[in-house]
Length: 260
Image (cartoon, rainbow, N blue to C red; front, side, top):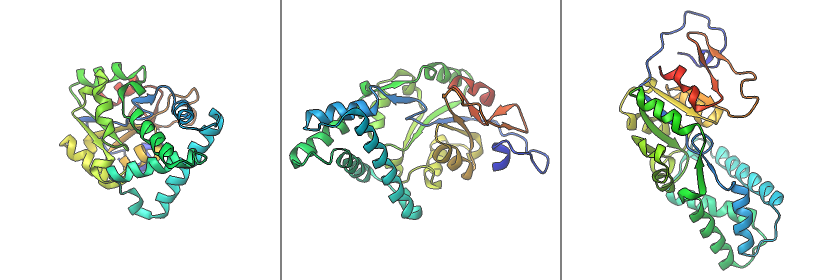
């Protein structure tokens, strides 16, 4: 099926028959899990333990700015900006922490702050599954489909997944730092398809990011749907003309219309 058909525009010709889905690939952060307490709260609290006097709002502003700056630096590198590794991810998060807590001048304190934050977000107890995750994964299992987790993360994600029973059901956890490439790059999705052991068009990618998850998957020949749990999620959402399937869902429990 074409990109335009996936996005709900009017097709110029008869729609291509739908390929049955064999594997559902789920993004991690923002789709399956979220930080608990929120990232900004954890940064503010841990930062204070190492000498920061920033309030929560300022921490949030700096954190968002650091992430955007990091993404912009990657974009300027072109396709090579999607290359990654365990070392690169550690280096990136160390830089982000430094951008947020630039006032911590003592190098030892700054390094300890980074190490505590890095360890914090590697523990299952620092995350929570969204309320719809267990039900959705159970439904995928009942339908006899495979489930994998596919995320721009590092090896810490394996430990996080082992701490949550629904995530333990994943047939594989595909992590960008181990693949060597991030979403939305085709090499990431190639590794994802290899992990599923089927054709690309038999894999449904589910995620909250329209570029990294949906756009990257469609470009690589997978099927894709975006999950948006916000109250206005359905505003502007399209439907595939070839069948009764939404391009955006409000909950993972709505995946049944895609998978059945």
